[in-house]
Every structure is written in C-alpha cells, then in structure tokens.
Image 1 (tube, rainbow, N blue to C red):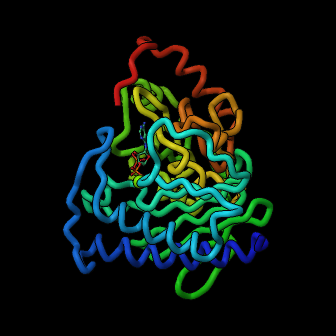
Image 2 (image 1 turned 90 degrees about the vertical axis):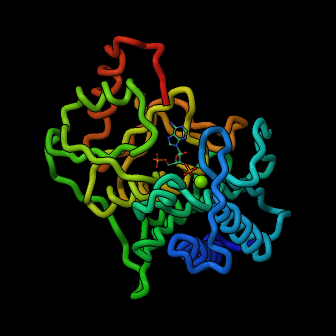
Length: 288
Ligand SMILES: Nc1ncnc2c1ncn2[C@@H]1O[C@H](COP(=O)(O)O)[C@@H](OP(=O)(O)O)[C@H]1O
Ligand SMILES: [Mg+2]
C-alpha cells in the first residue's frame, strides 16, 4: 500500500478536480448545469452532489483500488448499511452545505477523509468559492493550499470566553440549540453554512467555537470526519460535550449527540454547554 504522504498527494489532486467540477455547477458553466433538486430524508440532493460523488469515487478507486480501502460517500450510502469491514475507509461528502449551495451563499465545501478503525488519519476540505483547500495527516499539522502554494495553519486565540465568536448552522436548528445559544457566555454568534466552512472560519480566526446538537435528525460521518481532523491538527479540539471523542464507521452513520469544536477554553465550554442543556425546560423537544 502507498504511504500516507503519497495518498495525500492523490487526495489533494482529486479534491482540486472536485472543487473545479462543483464550482462549475455553482456558476452555471457545467455542460448540463440544471441542478434538478430532489429531496432525500428532507435534505436536498442535486445533480452536482451526484456528479461530484461519482468523480471523487472513480478517481480515488482508479488511483488506490478497492483491495485495501472501503469507500463511503453520502450519495452512494444506503440507509442501515453495516459498518464497512475495511480497516481503511474513505468517507466522502461531495457537497457539504447543499442548502447553502442552492441558496447561493457561497458557503459549501467538499470533504474527503480517510478513517483508520474509527478515527480520521488523513483529511482534505476544499472550499470552491475561496479556491482553498485545507489538508492534514494525523500528527503532521494542517495546511492551507491555494494557487500560490501551501502554508501551515494553526489556531491562535487569546480571547476571554465572553469574547469568543460562535458559529452555528443556518438551517439545522432546534429549540434546544436556541436555548443554549441564549445562555452561553459567548454572545457573539453568527450563522455559516456547511460544517467544512464553519471549521475553516475557526482555523482562519474568523470564529472560535462551533456547536452542533442532534435532534430528530443528526449529522452523519461525512459531515464531521474531515473537518474534525483539519481542526484538531491545527491545534483545536472537536469532541462531544462530555469531552469524549467522535467515532466513525461504527455501524451507525449518524453523529448523534451534542458536539463542540473550539480553538480555546474547550473543557470550560463543554462544561458550560452541558450545564445549560440540563436546564433546558423541554427535554423531549428536538425539532429540526
Ligand atoms: N441536525 C442535523 N440533522 C441532519 N443533518 C445535519 C444536521 N446538522 C448538520 N447536518 C448536515 O451537515 C451538513 C451541513 O449542514 P449546515 O450547513 O446546516 O451546518 C449538511 O449536509 P449536506 O449539505 O452534506 O447534505 C446537513 O445535512
Ligand atoms: Mg452532502
């Protein structure tokens, strides 16, 4: 099998190709740019999601084969699918932030993560609208790549907890999340689409904290795996609110629970969030 640095070169090349393809649908320059929006489990799926998924899977499989690797993509995943039996599994979101892509906010991303066992060891997050790619190998730091080259990036926050800027989903919110947002010590809050774009905002020091609470629905492995590694390798933390790690390819593709990503004050934020959520008056409400 190729080593991780060789695999990363392939994953970056595939991510750049995918970024160009996805951008061509966004800007209407694709050969057949009609998005033909359909709904699957109340979430929109477009022709762009499917085309980019096919592109990434075919490119990775052509370069790396299927003997050593399993492949899970949002668009080919079948509900109730079992845990993938491979030790090394690619988990792919060809279009993270489909709603924002359709609504033309520019906040959408491509996630490509390689999982070993249950943890991400290699990740690429591409953001077509800024023509930027973030990549990481576990233990090797995170890099930002643009047309002019790659530079190492690290989170750097010296703020007090009250001054932190919190990012949350624009479209996946419920009463429990609104209650938490009202009671947290950090009241600078902004909505950004796509998990990849929210985590990129933290790496780029435009934000400090991201919170995701599952309700009746939950984000999936492909929403979190690549963003988690690019943040933690840049020096941030990304855990459940009880500070336990996320796990992937476990047999349940959902990331249920209360998740918190931050660049500083992680334990304090997790403790505060847990305390506030236990005071939420309607424990059974989870509307998404
Ligand atoms: N509570 C939730 N339930 C279901 N999906 C969620 C979710 N929170 C986030 N997601 C998924 O995470 C991605 C980013 O969401 P958001 O922009 O709201 O942060 C979206 O996936 P896709 O766009 O890949 O389908 C969305 O479906
Ligand atoms: Mg998607």
